[in-house]
Amino acid sequence: MSTPAPPPSGSAAPRAWAATGPAWAAIAIAALTFAAWLSAALTPVPGRLVPPRRWYADASFPKPAPPSYSSHARALLGGLDTGDTLVAGWVVERIEAPHARGPIRVIAARDGQRLFVRIVARGSEDQRPPIKTAAHDLYYERLDPPEPRLGPGELAAIMREIAERVYAGETELQDPPP
Image (cartoon, rainbow, N blue to C red):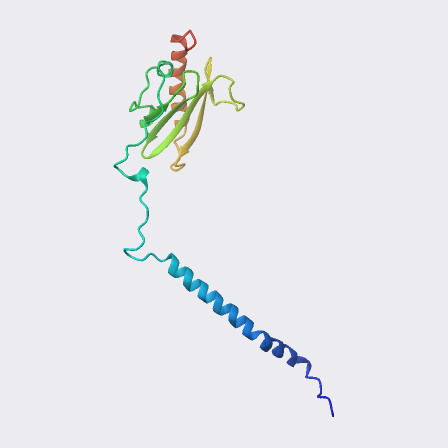
């Protein structure tokens, strides 16, 4: 009995591939089956799947009321109120000041863009404030959306106008809030 001659050096790889071919075919069939199932599962069927309604977008639900505006904060800001116009056409959209000694947040809007100005007690935060008064620090939080950018000096003018109101309110309110 003679032993068969060893195969040439280049023919061993095709035999190994041929031996694992059915396994690769099974993996490919499984992947295609999963992709077809996933596609069918994610495709909405008219009349069967209805996206849930968002309660907050529904007009039948009232919008939540903004936080209250304390009388001390109103006096500190010189009576600034919702709808008042600031520099460069910015309109006060909302003022949040629920506590007499807490921070005050003035939200101004113009052309769909909002600017947030925060007024806190002097030295209550570690950051250096852009504007200081005798008893308060004023910070701007962000511009939402960030584009278009404000004109040169526009942010400083808005901050200065609010700071002037705070300074005038501080001189009128010599005694601390209750």
